[in-house]
Image 1: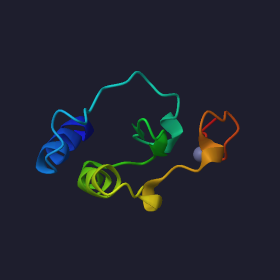
Image 2: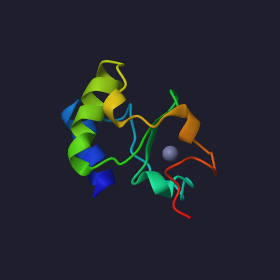
Image 3: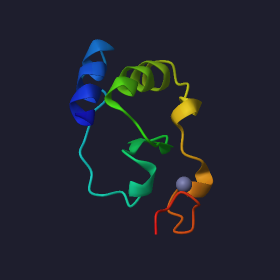
Image 4: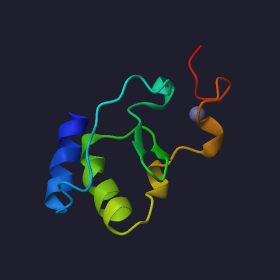
Length: 87
Ligand SMILES: [Zn+2]
């Protein structure tokens, strides 16, 4: 499960207590697959798999480098007309 993968990755990175993996309600980005948002940066990731958790935590949370490979384009976020949306 995605959330437990993040919890493990956060613990592995020694960020316990500084970073939390929270459930959220539907973010209305379902067409982008499992979506993860990193706050306070408000960087959105789409199509995230459990095996990506380590990379996001290590690169983004530890080193401050967003994982561009998984990043959702700004134009997709909260855009009902984004080309990925399944109608
Ligand atoms: Zn999109």
